[in-house]
Length: 113
Image 1 (tube, rainbow, N blue to C red):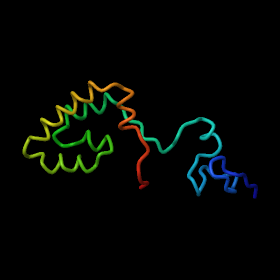
Image 2 (cartoon, helix red, strand yellow; image 1 turned 30 degrees about the horizontal axis):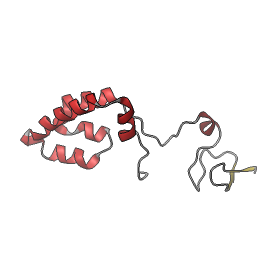
Image 3 (tube, rainbow, N blue to C red; image 1 turned 90 degrees about the vertical axis):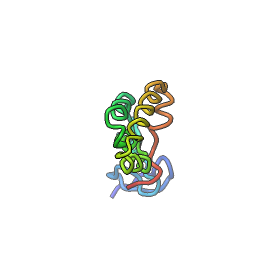
Image 4 (tube, one colour; image 1 turned 120 degrees about the horizontal axis):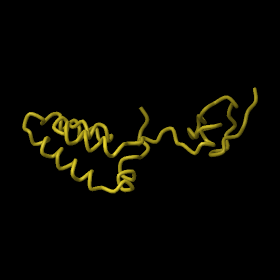
């Protein structure tokens, strides 16, 4: 079998692999496209709609990858406090610039599932 060296870590890998098993860097066309497959892209408008309409259940927190906060919103949803907090989150997210929204929420996950 033909092997190539990974451009990121230099390990010898099989030519047909999509990602390097050592550093998980994309190989082939994915690497040439400049797109990181592990990057989680979020939509700011969708996050605002989720927080305004379903903020009492914490759906917007789950969407943004904040699972602990979403669970707390869901746990205390019967108190209606998360509903008010969801509306506050909607206004804060709406006022946020697209650049700061991407910097805050469109990141690689800290751990893989």
